[in-house]
Length: 116
Image (cartoon, rainbow, N blue to C red):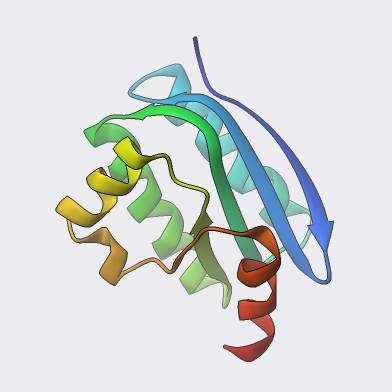
């Protein structure tokens, strides 16, 4: 299974719902497409929903970091939500939680953009 996505806007924040595996090859390519697509429409505050992401490999982590750098350079913010226990462990073990705010609920995550 490759990665797919859908996105929607809530109060100036674009939520990208990722579906599948964020892995080397088609997964990382589709992830880049998702980020480029929403940024091309002018979105700068982006919330990634990992609720339906089943696996992230090291290339996927690299793409997350590259997306963060790209969005930061454009004056935007990138945050994560709804990580499975496996993906949460990965983000915390690699200490990426120090670079990304991680949320459990969409409402809290979206509200955090207004206060940051």
